[in-house]
Length: 125
Image (spheres, rainbow, N blue to C red):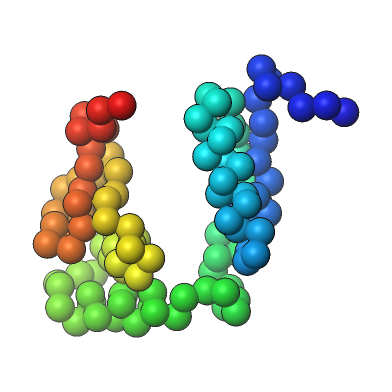
């Protein structure tokens, strides 16, 4: 079989959640496909598999994310579903990701001193 640039591609979990050392190559490939405007797809199965992979302890995971989440819990009043938002912010802080694009900007207002929250209207390409 040969790649057809004009046809959609379903991304497998191992491309989305590539482990070291292949994560750099996977990221670069996805950037190239995105830049080429190739239609990329994932399924609910891929989402479930991704959750299963990232929720188990792994040698390449950053335990600092959990530590940073606990710091946030001690400094910002949080509870219930807000914990999920805080975990995203903890991940961003550990990995040096300064901006979050979301349709739920008000949910992240409490983190505005730590990250920049973007809405779709703010993105100009």
